[in-house]
Length: 413
Image (cartoon, rainbow, N blue to C red; front, top):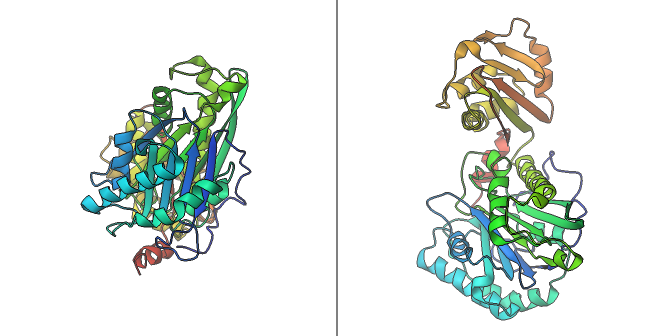
């Protein structure tokens, strides 16, 4: 696990209030990392609804398969997350491990196995010993208490250098409701759904179908617009839990995603997702710079997204940023290979607020010194206008440094 905190990390973990109906506990089960917590248990009051989005990898982990199969009833009483072992590419033994973990949890938490949701992160292909959970589960259930967000975020870290959390308050009708979320992710990030692991909790009374719609729409411009290295994990899981506890204070029950009373909540919910996904980009393995890629003037939003991802995933662009080199030629290359409509003679590129290329050539007023100063900033914006239409999109990424190679070259050592 990385030890040096990313220079792009927030100054501190946010102050996050309790979410009524949610209790948390962590433990050290010795899964891989000695001397640190590696298991998170979240317990929910009866009536809690759940929604989820998962990796689109064709080689998903056993916990991903488990959650997909249990999502339809839409009820949750417990969540178990472990770090250190992804329980991916583990065959029948991995599937048996998820079943045993759910049964162990259900027995300790007095619920049904199908009401237990699971997520794992860490090394792929190593056997997953579910018996380790049996040794800590009773203590976890007894210790579970509201509001232990930072401890929960730390327990699910792998190569992350800082715990990730976000919170917001919104009114549902006339009643304030709370949204809190945690996430982990630093490498193998090109989610295509959500980050490697992320969990959002609220006391709002929202039906499963409405919560699923809220989540599926919310990830599109947040987690799905983040890439660290272009690699989609086998374990990507984003789950949202709504306890409904605010109904006792008069919050209206939401059964439809189109309910106008949901507007303020949706905005706050999306803000939590946006904060968590940006923190993932800030913690990219070995990252020293946060990069915002904006593509405008595309034929469509979809086309703008594909071009933005082509730029954000380019090793040549990312290493130029790491080297503080205003190499706009690499951006031209990434635009050209994206597979979307582009016209060289209409293309314009900006680093920060400085236009470096215009209409198929270097900008006539290009200033190398000024552009180089922009590249020294810890946060850099690369903006491209294709000059073809009104399509626009935005993607977050980071630079590609020698530290990224060191972290991943030594991951199994």
